[in-house]
Amino acid sequence: MANRLADATSPYLLQHADNPVDWWEWSPEAFDDARRRDLPVLLSVGYAACHWCHVMAHESFEDAGTAAYMNEHFVNVKVDREERPDVDAVYMQATTAMTGQGGWPMTLLLTPDGAPFFAGTYFPDQPRHGQPAFRQVLEALSDAWRARRDEVTKVAGEVAGHLQTTGLPAGEAPLDEDLLAGAVGALAGEYDGQAGGFGGAPKFPPSMVLEFLLRHAARTGSPQAANMSGATLHAMARGGLYDQLGGGFARYSVDRGWVVPHFEKMLYDNAQLLGVYTRWWRQSGDPLGERVARETADFLIGELGTAEGGFASALDADSEGEEGRFYVWTPAQLVEVLGEDDGRWAAALLDVTEAGTFEHGASTLQLRTDPDDPSRWAAVRARLLDARAMRVRPARDDKVVAAWNGLAVSSLAEAGVLLHEPAYVDAAVRAARLLVDVHLDGERLLRVSRDGVAGRHAGVLEDYAAVAGGFLALLSATGDPSWLDRARVLLDRALDAFDAGDGGWYDTAADAESLVARPQDPTDNASPSGHSALVHALVGYAALTGSGRHRDAAEASLRRVRP
Image (cartoon, rainbow, N blue to C red; front, side):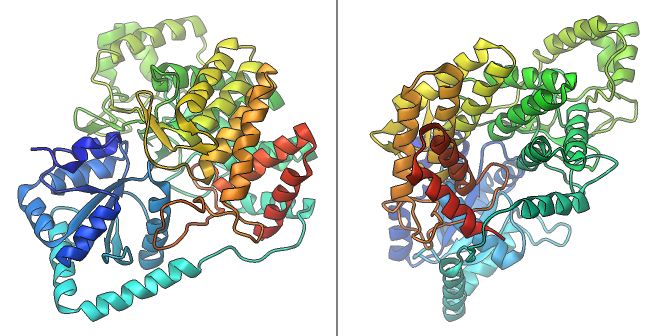
């Protein structure tokens, strides 16, 4: 029997519509029910392509006994972090403050007023590796709510107070070259000179760091910035992080050497990396940059493109219940598809071994050097793609997120111009028109749509900023002045509705739903923060129009966040 999530628009929430858990969507009614029943709220936050979200759902949320306990002792709320980034941001801040780390699935216990008093991430169904079982956690927290309410209320009040007082540090000094050179030096201290990238495992594609290094190298001629960015881009594109058959990058590598990825493919990663590889090729002339840019653009259009013209959020990591099954190969499978000679040749070329680099003797595909026979590789790749197409495909989260589509519009428009591929610009225009026709309601932007129907959730700062940036990129690519006018509408709304009054911006509009705290985080993560994306769009708009208002706002914001 379906629960309340059967009426949701989010693919992630719909994945839980048949759980025996009596889920609510995030809503005032859920918290009203918690007050009426005098129960805490169990908040579970995840997203459709999240592997460990699937694991916890299977182990706990599909279990009748666990679900019955949850329904009796808690009001259970499920949130798609991609649909409600404001809710995710506030409670991720609470999770990291309370536990020192964060991740998804994110699991919190809240008072009926929304104040968190417990936070964690994934919990197993049985005690494992020092972690308690999820049922044990639930029983302990339910007992605390009933028997030690004063302690619970005190903790919740302290955490809520912390969330409400966290803000931007004051900064007034101007930006200068010394600061930027210092950033390059700091990155050099984290740089992995053997495998590329920064820090150790797990390694995420550092899109914005690479963008900064490329721009710094172009502006200053810094060989250090050029070498770090170039070597990292080479390593990522040669390893298992990159889909050597179908194009596109996975979310991250579990190892230092970019061999074994966490296989989900996210729109925001691939949109940004398309831009980075295009600019790297433009600066360096390296043919690998051009190849990867073209293959990534083709992946975006072919695999993530939706029927209504936008781009889907993600491809799942799992198929047939196993992570990576769609993407990995054994030597025997290569021989079966290609025959003995080509199979052995492909295994050597792609580092597919009998021992395997992944699980069960299978290997990810790596292309550490260019093949000595490109035409043979092209034929082999086509045959492997045909064979892979017969496998069960990973699920696709087909909701269209405004901010991430804005990133895709920007990168496709730029790549189309630089690579002389009108089809890329056409795809960017189609996505932008969907954003105008479906996501724009006057001057207000809606966060998500699915199947050409807008959801009800308001856009946040990153949506306004990234979509405005995409419109400005289309102005440059097409010469159509209407994109400049549309960008101005979004930027003016952002300046008016998100202003924090001190040179900074909130992540939610002044008229947005009130949470336990109003999120304000200028930090870039896997995608640009709303703060940095807005600065970029404001500077671009000011350069095109000479607008002092927009340039002044960008400069004031940069002074505000200067370290």
